[in-house]
Image 1 (spheres, chains in turn brown, purple):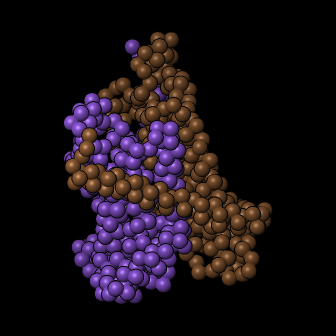
Image 2: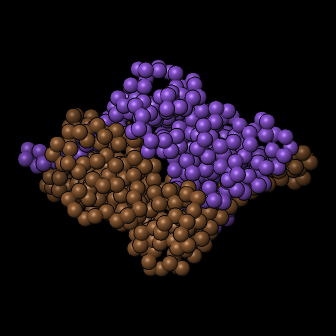
Length: 304
Length: 300
């Protein structure tokens, strides 16, 4: 069939525009990854393994030093926040999905609504609010714990829990809701209590649950804005004593931010190195999540 | 039937404590925002929203420049990402061969889950200088700097922030649109082709068919762009710029103002309340977008 010229031209132009838009949205991403890998890997390889343990060199120095305190900080923040956040979101999701009585269903509905709302909070707002709470309770807590401070590992952990919990909660709850009714009935027909039944259901949903945890872990590792006024950042190893929880602590993301914005060549190199490590961490967690969700069309919340 | 004896039912009900934790934390976040900004609201009312004076030494905090910066960058990013995400979603659904789709999908999903601070570093060290040398300088040389402002030496500007935001939110928006595009019923598509339409013409009609989803994708992009902090704070230039519509100049957004100024906040009496007030405004913008989405967005 021959098209009139105007239609043919219009069609070709639209196809070209679509191809151009696609190229323009993919090219920056590829360039970004290539740059981070190239510049970051160069720095890491040249200073391996001291870059993993040392503290940063003085700004403007001809050496780069290392980002040991930031790696430790990310490890501490993430592992503690994970240990606190997982049980909260897991059990809350179980309660919401398995609610039967009227008050139970009402609590479930409210949790769902508010958690949805929290998912839309900018993370800087969450960080700011955590700081606000911590700063206002400081005078009272200091009476019992003299070392208490608002800029601390503890505040960072609280902020990370609030950032990541909604993802875990919603993902697991969606999973529980999607369990076929006959499976649930089979479990209850064996005489299982609701508590036991929910444990069995969670095992039934193993891959969804693990995927939710991996997404949450990725969220925690890659969070920056919520840590500004909570963990605050630090370039030295914290001394290990009873006040460790109440001292500012660095993280890989804060290292990328502060070193990247500094005007010193050696710190900028550290920034590339830190973003390279972050990228590797996120790639690993992303691959893990995709592997766990293989064959499942639903349940990509948090990956987009 | 769900069996539950009284004893085990009580054990299960203990789980509701964790729901209470989640509910209380959301409530607490909102309450703290309100309470901490009250001194500023009480002192100046809506003054900070309509003035552009940031003078901590005299305890004057008008953050219109940041509010304007947020709206300008988020709107520009929205426009750019509308073109980019619709285009790349159409490309994915109609032109990319099915065997290549997983590669493209994984790349876009990965891009959506990467830490924003990495985008910030790339935006600061690669994108901003590039935009300065190849876009802003030539256009300024043509005499547009009177309207659009003067670029800074590093290229950090409201425009760089907008373009970086567009790059960051496109994978999200594109994912929403491409799924709906693939879900257009086959019989609708076949009916259109049977009219003798070309592929691009069919796509245009399909896009109209899923327009509510496109709107949803755009709203999601906008609220993400409003709330994005780390990346924006690195490329926007962090300069008080009352002429926030001059996009070649450096400026502030609300999020970058908070990130940049907070370390100083404890030195002044009203600065912390002013920043909480700004956060409250940002929160309100996000809430308004989400409420609008409930009304006009896709039905779930």
